Image 1 (cartoon, rainbow, N blue to C red):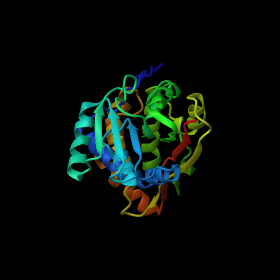
Image 2 (cartoon, helix red, strand yellow):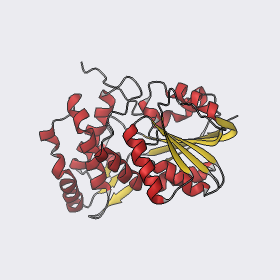
Image 3 (tube, one colour):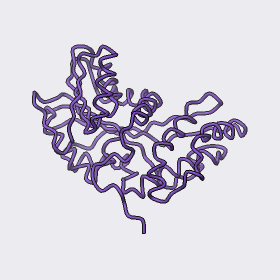
Image 4 (cartoon, helix red, strand yellow):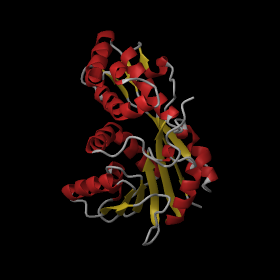
Length: 282
């Protein structure tokens, strides 16, 4: 029986420059969905925001857009490569009110005043006990402060009819391989719809929740490159846990094969839902 390979808060896709650039492209794909949830939750000008598991910094930059120059954002990640890359991007964008800190969330300490908002995207699924992590992070949030997280719901074997109409076999197969790889690696693919209980176990009120997704079709959609890039990043894990081989995946031609099939069949393709949850600290 395949044993899980991720039993701690490890990001299973490493932090190569290629992976960091993929995260930037993925954020462009999902960015408007995250910005909408941050806005709905109440992120406002002048706030101080803590972005945990910040990666390449994209959620930090979205937060900075909403809070304006009078606010401040602190991004935290335990990968030195991610922090260096995020700092370079902030400098290039002229964002003097965004800074990044290298730290493991299990050991991170906020040295200055508490923040008005705690945010994170695609972070909690990597922790065996996300409620315990969130409970600890809440100590850095002011009473009445916002807590906002987003996670993708990744069914290990999603029904094809919820992924596309009509069937696009290349897209369904690639998405299923990715989801099964995460599941076999010991990650919780269903964290998205467990955000309510996670918030409450951490000591927060029941959150408001909203599921958003991308619906794509046509030859110019970014969805083909998105799923191909995800598949490329997950491929080493995919092989390690026995989901598929490189020969089966043929990642170099995946995007074009997917595009060709979807266009020929006039398919509408749907991403997994990105579920947002938000509440205020009592």
